[in-house]
Image 1 (cartoon, rainbow, N blue to C red):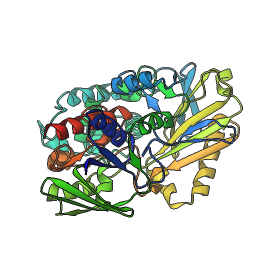
Image 2 (cartoon, helix red, strand yellow):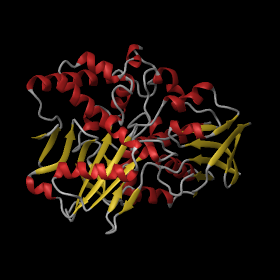
Image 3 (tube, rainbow, N blue to C red):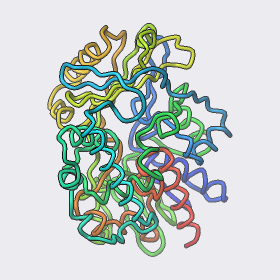
Length: 439
């Protein structure tokens, strides 16, 4: 009999399998999809250029990820940041340098004070028990309600809303203030989340994040196209019923986004907070867009390729070209209400929309344009990660982290540090493995 069955073959599940197998345990990863990787997915253009439809960046603070990358000799390169950034406001374009765009003086001061207040509040979060909230009012407010009360100018509020939406993958009215503070605290501050150089977008996988998945897959045992239907947990063991038969083990580790847990049948049913967790932690709505050009021509104009748009569905872009500039690559993100409205359109229509948005931003059509709407993925449901609305952490935070032996949980949403990132996925796997082996 297996010691552990891991449900979910993303980076967190594979890393947990590696660590458990390193301790001599017999482990099997079951993945419903026809590929491993979860929210990391690398494809290639006809010329062979890697396109990351999912996660692709590593920051200098991501020590677990960097340690694995160094051990496996997976190439990275710095994200290009030289030149001016662009702020798009309607039909007007403004060049600026640094992280904060050029705003009217009053709006700039207002935004600075607002961000400082947000960072001070985030220091109140206890990462190991974020459901313990010093002021319950903070979990009752949406981020937008806090923003409306703490930012006085419309320009500052607009910039704040767009910036935080691109970080969280949802609109400020959808997410609680407290979840925002937890997210900031888990990254060690706001700057690591929003900055490119020195922040979470500092380094890119040169050959695609799929190399990370390949390196983990080579060291673990797994089965793809194995859809789990029912999980029976009784008497210190589990029975996992799938479309390819039933597997038995002493424990199960579920490496799934909380929103995906609702697709499984548990016998006996999970306790109410664990059942409702899947309903109360929805996924963000993000469409990732990648464009390939013959060369990074914007650099010749003194531009970094980084744009921030206060209007339109494509909110933010980065230059993700290879280090030698052999071809140009722009990566952008469709976030928020306008991006979500496009979910009603066909993939072809969405792709045409984003291709035209990129043409308007950079002045010429791309050779190739790829778009990935993660809400189309039934086994994921969205991107970048799940989030809590008001009351979520108060009511369901403990269910997010605490195991129910023989059931254990991992995945980036369950991480104490760097929630929503590859680093968080690895951190959550480490904690789950420690909980499982100590029981």
